[in-house]
Image 1 (cartoon, rainbow, N blue to C red):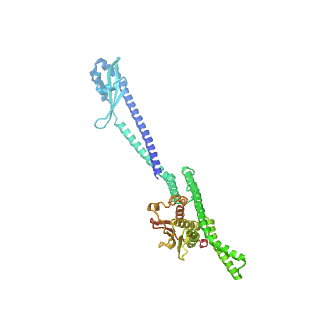
Image 2: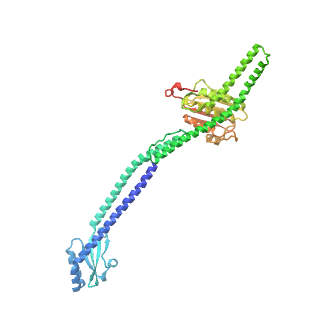
Image 3: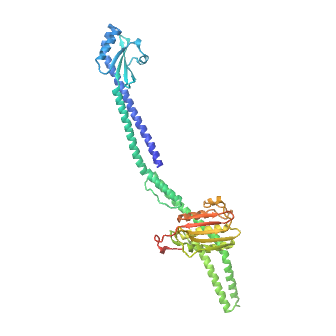
Length: 462
């Protein structure tokens, strides 16, 4: 609403300025018109008395002219006139007495303004002073005050009406749409995308909403690409461990097959060797199938999944890598299926990243414990603890930042924990880290339990 308030304020300032200027112009024109009327009235009065004043001036001089003016004033209601001799002019009168009618407005102490109009007299081509016509201006002042009050009331009325209309319009056309856009941006910032456009209007805000929606779709595609790249890198690491893991059963198969090929074995020995070959072949099939299952999995919509089976399967895949690094992988997993609503492939990717990081944190070997338990709140907890080098306190705060890594060059991209954090957040969970330099690290993944009433159990997957 801050933008709407600024627009309202800007508009009101403009309205107030325009109305104030218009009112001032009206009052100014009214004042000029009143002055012109007073001067015309004064001139008409003097022109009416001009013959009598001229005769008196010629016959009797100053005294006679003053008497004529005083007698004429007594017969008038309102205006008051007096003759001003050129030798008795005040400073103000000297400034106003010219060859045309002049006007001065004076406000006495009783606040009843009087307009003095000075009409110059010329008798026989000579300057004979001027006639001062004093006209009370209280009616005009009252009219000006009424006009001023009316302008102020009109100004306030226009301001209030404009503010109300713009405020309501600002809330409807600006405030609410902006609130929707801010909420959508915050939702996207939490990793929940793609998002459809929240506005369908064709104005600037509508175009902005469409741009934000398109951005969310592009971010979704880029996120999937990054996660896929991370999975491919993980597969490469796992393949190296699997290749080493397949070495032992292949040697057994080759040795047994060689013995059978010599033809020196008895039937019982051939049968035993064949069973051994089959057993080792089944073992290799399981290893290869696990790797293929991991590689083939793609993100899908959330369904009811059993995290216990996912954890066990992931640990089986990671054992060759742990064994090659001289790391003992221990699982402490009860019989609870620990069902949640989620994506099995993404949950497995989280576990793979965390277990791989734990193995890499123990360059000289160690113990890696994967434990599952249920919190008192009902959340499913997957706890991964290593006895590695640990983390600095400042590194813990940055652990989930993209591209942040403390590993040597070539050992990681710094995206694994960031991707894991994003996936867990999408599942409504959280990741907590507890670590101390030189004393190992514990990652705790907390996931909300599934709501069987909301998800069809037939959709359950591993």
